[in-house]
Length: 271
Image (cartoon, rainbow, N blue to C red; front, top):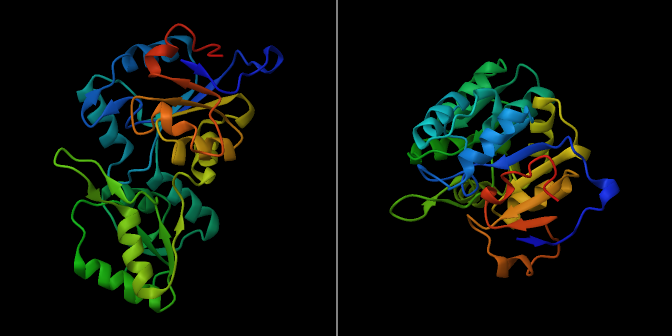
């Protein structure tokens, strides 16, 4: 493990709250990362508040809980925060009771229904683009035409690709680029690396930035958004970023670890 920006003794906080990415930190696809179950069990036994974040907007928290249970991780629905939920929270604050044309799946449509949004292709306030494994040319064409007519363009996250067993899949950022190229309109991205995702998660569990840690596997999304939200950050090397790549960025995480297994036994004070 590497301490890249040690926190002084007086800055240490024995009452940490944890935000953490899901893929690359707790699981790879459907497989648990060794030690993730022990790490979460320690947090739960100590009553330490935590929330799991994901930029993927396909599934609802209930669906994700079931997926994680199959992998061997028992995480309550209330401890799962998706880019779809962050997007819904953002839209509720921006334009309560509005309307949207959605290109996405149940994770996004459910989140928007729950804030009272009407989903329509008839003069919506917003076009909201999320993740889906079945992007439709017809739906994308409709989105382009609605943006051209003045609908505001929102996307859940900027990820250009997503993983699959066969290789990379085009994700929200790639399809957003297509719509942007056709309309000249850039979307507002709500998910990571926008620190808004972190702040909305903090509000969801009543936590504060000064005593919260962000654990992620990507320098360009997890670490930078944690820093911009005022959090201490831990990079784990069990996902995308490598030890060698850390030095290529103009910012650094507080701590670099091989995986969350290195936090077992020290969650009260990881520094």
